[in-house]
Image (cartoon, rainbow, N blue to C red; front, side, top):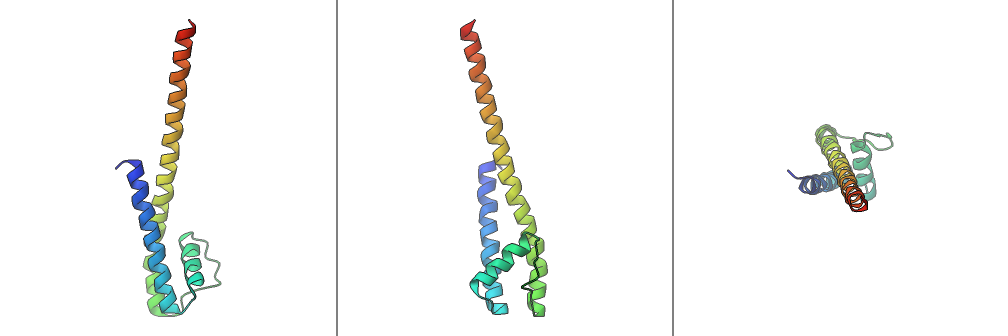
Length: 108
């Protein structure tokens, strides 16, 4: 899979998992939308401040699977972004080397 397509897929998955988690916690825990998205981001970033936490068994079970899936998706997201960044840097360096070699040949 090319890097640009991979970035689009994992970006979409990241957005979807944040939306699903936010909706679930909003209705299951009765949290505000802001509290729900905040909990999702803090959980997936593995920060876990502890100010919010699931209070019922259904939410706890959901959270177990949410974190396992979400952390994997987030790692994939950052990995794809890093790969894209490295590819672009390498491409720019290759272009600069080609230009330099062309200039050196003309100067000779």
